[in-house]
Length: 289
Image (tube, rainbow, N blue to C red):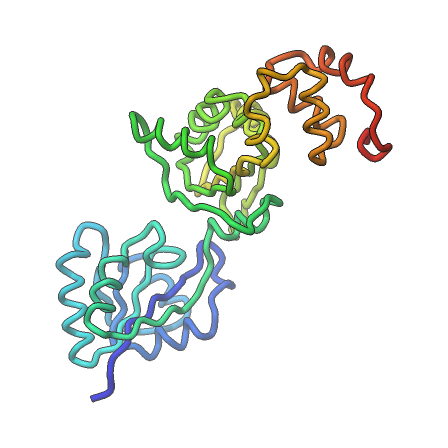
């Protein structure tokens, strides 16, 4: 008997044109499709005229269902695992089944597909040579406070999902946590790949102010820049004069304008006060732009 395989299938996150031919071929050829929501997956199958036996596999039954699926795989049945949108196992059920399959010596094959957080990262304009993905952040309490502390110290860009009902409170919490975090570049991306896709760019504080009175709907990804080396190195700015602080930032590569804005934000001073100190600094012409 030929060894069966478990296929982890990435499905569209909003636009059905993102379906790959390989995904369609896989769904047509497997013996069974395990779905997070059979009703939602049925719509996808109907759209592409695919008829296949389905079995529910979601967060409330994945432990028991994983045992059943592993047995079917051992009997030679090829199985495709799909979530409602995106890749199984990424903020969706799948991890338990994959662990059991690997432990049982069953080959696990990825059929890559769209990812909302990866799409948001690549359009963010931020450094993504290294990044962190946090799924949904804690709603309240110590865990939320811990998340804010970790984000404030993170050197890498961080992406996470957020509910439209909690987005404004989250941006407010980020903005109020520290002046440094409030001044970081960020992106709020909603409804990625869908008809009403939108991206909002700015600092955390700017986004908090801009979106506070807007009605935001749909699925949302928030991307926040990591702590720059300059920020880490200038942690002891309290011991520096305004002029010394400005020089440190400019020497690190910031323009004069950027340095003034950063110093004003960190020290919670009017930019005009910082500018008065900056006029004595002589730097290359391009640093003044």
